[in-house]
Amino acid sequence: MNRIPPFLKWLISSILGIALLTGIFVVRGDGQAVPLPAEITASPTASPTADPATDINNLMIALVDSKQKIVSITVLRQSVDGTKLAIVNIDPATLIVPPGQGFVPISEAGLQGSFDGVDQAISGALGIPIDGSIYFPRLALAGLVDGVGGVTVNSENLYRVSEAGEPAQYVRYGSSLLTGGQAAGYAMVKSKFETTDQFMKRTNQILRAVLENQQGDQARVQEVLSALGSLAQSNVPTQNIARLIVELRAANAWSSASISRAP
Image (spheres, rainbow, N blue to C red):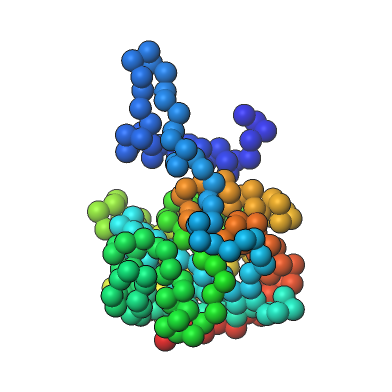
């Protein structure tokens, strides 16, 4: 086990913990644990309707809370030559029409059915090209953060980073090194006392830190994303997402990224 990366140890322990709490992991009468179902341990795969593996330049990243509510939407737009990055933050209150649904806020789209087609509904409503999307629940984002050794943020206020009903956890004013759980909460839990723009700024800090600091080549980054298993959902192959992450890092595109909001 000493040769297993710390991130993978953490992820395995987290998945087993979730399984024990939810009853997914059962114990037979002989005292041996029954393996987790394939749908729990499988790597993220493209949906049956997804196009074959191709390069992507515009990736939508959605952060999803414990109630399957989309709390943050960010689109990374890479220039054709791969040297520039535009970050578009989208208000989750924006109304869209996902397949099989009527007008719903982006935040509620997952609650109405599935996440299939949410990215294209956003693209159509706002005129923003989106080649593919990936959905990170809190545990998946926390795993990525811990995989890079935590992230440092410069908080402009005191923020609660635990969801309602959980023991209170806070990030205080000033510079702090955050672990995975703290960082995920900092990116995903909006305070009723802050504006949407202030919240988006916090989300951007975490996404930049965790994506810009992914280590290794495309194969290594793909391995990290694939290790998330069913904790994350994507409608394009993880190899394409890994390529985009590596190219943006190699071009030092994050430091000069333009940031905008829609609508």
